[in-house]
Amino acid sequence: MDTGRIQLAARIRPNLPGGEYHVEVSQSTNIPDCTIETARFTFHCDADPSSLLPHEIYSVYPPRDCFGKFDMVLPHIIFTRRTYPWERNFGNAPDSPWITLLLFDETEGAVVTVMPRREAFPPPDGVYCPALGEGGQEEPCTVLDVPAELFCDVCPALDDLPYTAHARGVCRDNKAIEAVQIDEWLSVLVSNRYPCSVTGEEGVKNTAYVVSIQGFENFFNDVRLRQRIRDSKEYSHVRLFVLTSWSFHCRQDDFDFKTVFQGLDVDPLIAKTSGNTPPPVHNLISKGFVPLNHSLRDGGRTVSWYKSPFASCEQKTRKNRTQFFSDSRLIYEPEMGMFDISYASAFTLGRLLAMQSGSFTAALDAWRSVNKREAIDRSNHALLLSHIDGACRMMNNADMKDILLSRLTDLTKELIGEQQSNA
Image 1 (cartoon, rainbow, N blue to C red):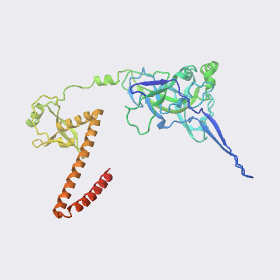
Image 2 (cartoon, one colour):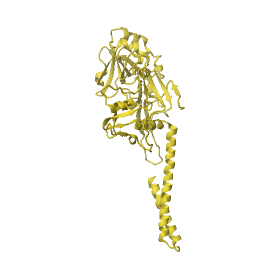
Image 3 (spheres, one colour):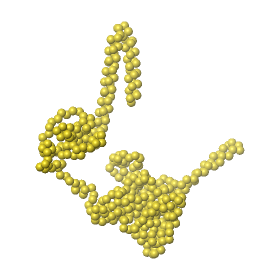
C-alpha cells in the first residue's frame, strides 16, 4: 500500500463463514480383509461471542481515561483483525456486523455488572434479553443493563448497522515499531452518537461499550416489537453482552492540542535576581545563565547552570575536542561548585536532530562500515609486516623463501579464521 494513502472498504468477510463444519476422511485399500476406519473431525468457526482479548484491540478514540473536547467526535474502536465485525452471522443480514458500539454518559443509568452466566441468562422479569449465554454456566460474563426507552432511542436501526463498521487499510512503513506484527488492513467500529459534554474542568464521563447484538434480530426487524419495548411497561431494561468498554471525560472548554500549545508560557528562559543575590550568581544570570534541575547519570540529582544558545552574551571560547557522549561536555565551575550543562545539552540536541533524519543515519552507518573494514585491513597489514620483518632477521638467504612462504600461509589462515569468528 502506498505511503500517505488510506483505503476504505465497506466490509471484509472472512474466507470461511461462521458456523459448524464437519470433515470426514476415508481411505480404500486393495488388501483383502483390511478395513480402514473413516476419520471424522468437527470444528466451529466463529469469533468469541462474549469476550475480546486485549491484543485484538489496536486502539480506541477518544483515548482511554482522557479529558478533552470530544463533543463533535464519534467514538470508535479499531480491531487488529480485518474481518472481526463480520465473523459471526447476524440473522439474514450478511452485510451487518454482529456487534455495535453504544455510548452512554454517567447520568443515563446504564449499569455494567460482572456475574456468572447462570445468573445473567435467562434475565429476571422486566429485562429484555433474547440472547443466550454461550459457554459454562459458572463462567463470569460482563453484561450491560440499559433503560429500555433509552436503548430503543439510541440503538442503530437495521438499515444503519452496515454503516457502523468498515475496514481500513493504511501503510505501516512510518508507524511505530510494535511488539506484534499488525496487518495493513484493520476493522473499525464507530458509534452512532456524539458524547455528552459540560462546561467545567472535570467534564462529564462518557463510556463506550462494544456489545453483541446476536439474538436481537427480531428487535431490529420488527418495528412494532421495538416500539412495544420502548413504550410499554413490560420491560424496564435491556440486557446485552459487553465485550469491552472504555471511558473518557468530555468538556466544552477548548482542551485540544492547539489550545494547550498556544497557552504555553513562551517567555525567554531568564532567571530573576534580587538585592540579596550573591555577586557570582548575579554575574552568571546577567550573562543569560539559569539554574535548572539536573539528573546525573548515576541517578543522583543536583542543580546546574544552563544558557540557551539564543541568549545574547559573550561566551568564553573553549577548545573543541572530539567527544563521544554528552557527559564529556559537562563543564565544572569551581567557584560555584556547580556544572555548566550548556554544551552537554547542545550535544544531545544535535545528536537527536541528526538521528531523526533517515538519510543521515543511513550515511552514518555506511561510513562506519567503510571505516571498520579499512581499520581491519590496516591492522592485518601492520601485523603481516611485523611478522615478515621478524622472519627476515632470523633467516639466511638460502632458506628465506621457503620459510617465508610457509609463515605467510599460516598467518593468512589465522587471520581468516579470526575474521570469521568476529563476523
